[in-house]
Image 1 (cartoon, rainbow, N blue to C red):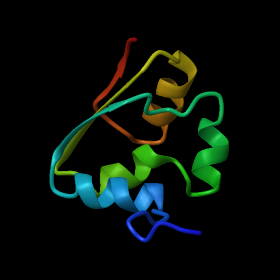
Image 2: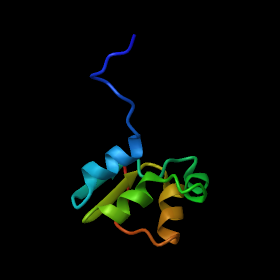
Image 3: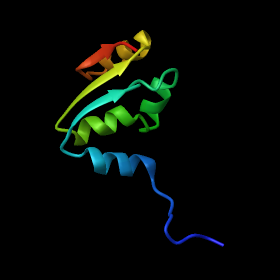
Length: 81
């Protein structure tokens, strides 16, 4: 017996809709230790947010992930926790 008030939501599409045209601070932006795999699978949220946000700053505590994203051309990345 389902409740009609609740439905399944695609997490990524929901976040992208809510963030479109906005200034975003993305905490945990690298998805470490799965940064490379996420990029290859077109599943890295930071990459998708970068396309829809008016501006974005990514923050992560993983230096390797920050370096990977920087090497791939992403900007406004900060190492921190």
